[in-house]
Image 1 (tube, rainbow, N blue to C red):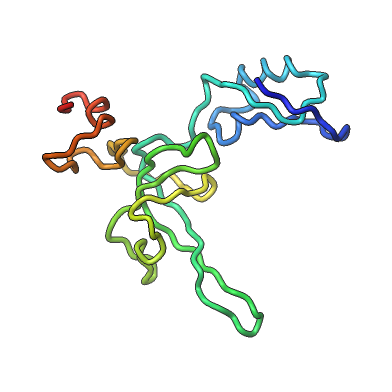
Image 2 (image 1 turned 60 degrees about the vertical axis):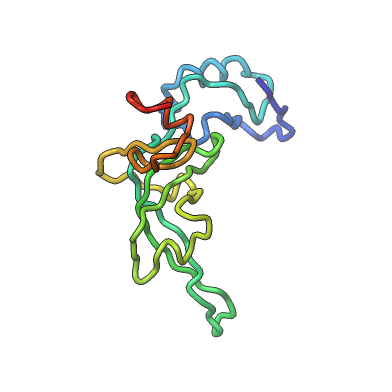
Length: 173
């Protein structure tokens, strides 16, 4: 457990690092309450600790929609660039190092008002999206390998991925 002492005496509530982007109810979380009691009165403003009960907002394989800001052009009247928001669908691959982002595999063949994912994303089908820009959709989960990012059944005959082999019940390893 690592703690940073509070410099500002006006600071009343510490920042609990593992609680950021945790789906568990913070008021009901037993681990958070234990840590809160342990640091009470120490004037700690930020704390990092290992939490075994942390819950991700989105699970691997979950189908989602996400928004993305795209440069729309330049407005000479206001002398500034203008942006528009586009929406795409994809599948959650994994949370990016317990941060504020998830890696999403973007679906192929989409078009949002003439904008395709390939027009925006230069890194193939995968994009790192902020949690606040992701929305769960009512579609069944799909299996996606956290190591190679391929969907179940998408692997070529000569493909070998230790993640796929370990995750699938009848996979060839």
